[in-house]
Image 1 (cartoon, helix red, strand yellow):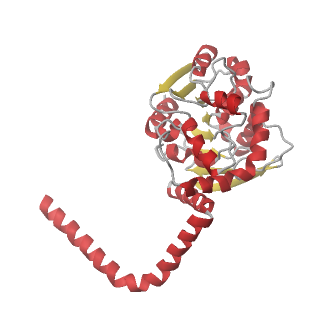
Image 2 (cartoon, helix red, strand yellow):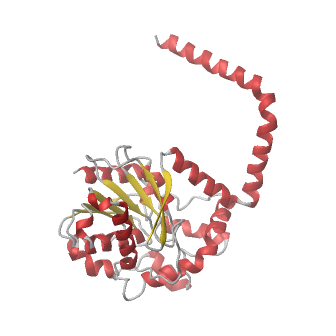
Image 3 (cartoon, helix red, strand yellow):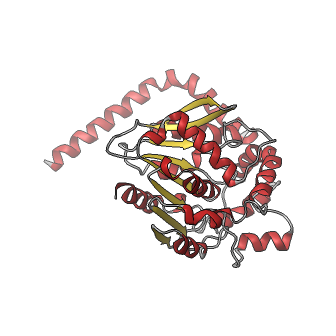
Amino acid sequence: MTAKMDMKTLVWYGAAGVAFLMFLPVLLPFLIPVFGLLIVLYMKRPDLLLIGGSELAMWKMGFRKRYRITGGYTYCYAERGQANPDKPTLLLLHGFSAARDLWWPLSIRIPKEFHLICLDLPGHGNTTRNMQDSFTYEAQAQRVHHFVKVMGLNRRPLHVIGISMGGGVAGLYAANFPKSLTKLSLLCPAGIKTEKVSDYDAHTQTNGYLPELPDSVEEYADVLPYFSYRLRHTKLPKQYWRGVQLLRTKDNPFYKKVLEHMMSNEAVDSLRENMAKITVPTQVIWGVHDRVLHPSTADILQEGIRNVEVHMLEHCGHVFISERPYKSANLLIKFAES
């Protein structure tokens, strides 16, 4: 039976190869311009390739980009599936200077029966940016709550998941609107001031500039070890960083404002100040080798939230959802279904 199946497979591949060769003369006039365009984009506008790759990944995973206009904002979000009475809706909030596509490596590992919404927080991605707004965790949590109400997400089980800055927003959301969600996952959340200095903070204090807001291609490449433990010695192609630079540098004035608001006296320790008000079941996940937000912060959350479980992941840093997506997804799914 195995030999028979192998022969069938061999015949099928052979027939496909012959068909390709037969149609190659017809396809060449179309393929050559396409490859030429890709080469030009790689050399001149690699940012467009990054955008195209992200949009293609979104589509292949079953997400659809949607917009909701309300309260003076046009909220952009990626949605997969529909509300399932047997599963909570997962609302995912990205980190600082990121957008909905931060969640792609994780989302593809989450079963299709879950209803997923990856939201571009106001000012980020394709959601409205108003430079006059406040971008503290609490202010963003208020906007998330408005989005949740308009979408009707608070009328069914809702599991809010936030990472880094988005974790701070998610924590303030749970503290201020406890009846609007059923579960909370905080992935290395910001919003807690600690005595232990992270490598990121040490770099900022020593060098006087923020690693997250570089200007040159070389500075962008230097940022990677702060966020990824597994890629800390990896040299990505220069054109990749050139694409990232074209995408992000124009937004640096906005990101600087967001950081100022996050680091203000009002906001810098706001998650710690409000964590006692979090009453829903809560999950905390942190990378042991996080160089941006010190991993010891997880201990503060474990002591300050009454119904919490904490997971420390080995061999990963701040963006552990990309470094260990299977483990991260399994922890989230198990918690969501518990």
